[in-house]
Image 1 (cartoon, rainbow, N blue to C red):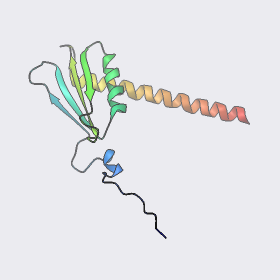
Image 2: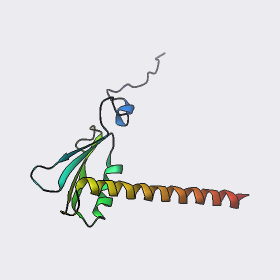
Image 3: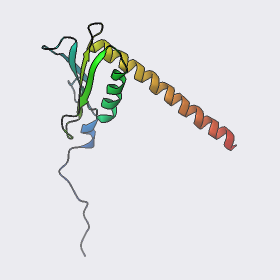
Image 4: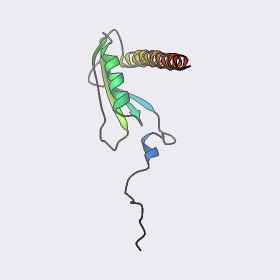
Amino acid sequence: PRVARAATMNQPSRAEKFVLPDGVRKLTFTRDTKVANAGTFVVQKEDHTLGNAVRMQLHRDPEVVFSGYQVPHPSDNRIVIKVHTTKNSSPMQAMTEAVDCLRTEITDISQKFVDEVDSFRANQQ
């Protein structure tokens, strides 16, 4: 009788998608040398989930002229976020405010979810 073997694939470890190697910074920023008040953030071990959320939050800021992100390659687990602001702000300030707002929104959503689950459980008894 033939023995079934698990198929093996030549693929990277799944941990490579989210475990940051020693000595690698999670976030880096490079100021644009040609455009004032512009720069590029690179976030390691992230994907479209974070990139799109940050981009949309940056768009809500009236001091942000442009924001966009890309995932350079599907197997490259990083996002590149470009930010251009007015002279009244800076890319670093805009990014800090966007992340702070996202943290607040996520905390609010999480609390509403917990409240709904608690309410559901209370009504089941």
